[in-house]
Length: 212
Image (cartoon, rainbow, N blue to C red; front, side):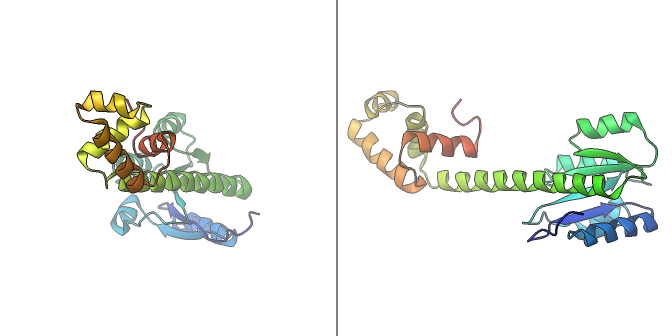
């Protein structure tokens, strides 16, 4: 059995079969996760739970009345949800499994499944969510740092990150070397970077296409 995390992630179980849902919640809680059940995709959407700082995932039945698991996955993807999805089915539908995996599902488990493989899959999904969340947090921090730059400073920052010297930047922007030097100082101070390489990493963290 998985050891209890220091800060439990939140696992949402969405399944219209109440006894099965309760059994999964009990299993997850006994393994140390914070588990929350939802009787339908609509109930989950109505609750609109925020993504937790500790990470989390959805354990989702693929076949449910009204809004199916696949439809819920589509809506969450469109909304940019950070929750990874682990699908369950009692039908062994290969076609649905392929659709789910193509849309980014972490795994696809056929009911009935054994406890430990299920818990291992949840742990993998939660770890993925934490990695994604950390990356998004770093991206937002980078965007915030770069957001302090004036439009001209942002131009200078880009050329600096691309490896141009002050003189080359001055020619590109038709300004004096001294003005570039002042802008460069402001860029480094505002972004907390100490070199062109650090600045390049910051820009790429904010936007992978930022130096194209």
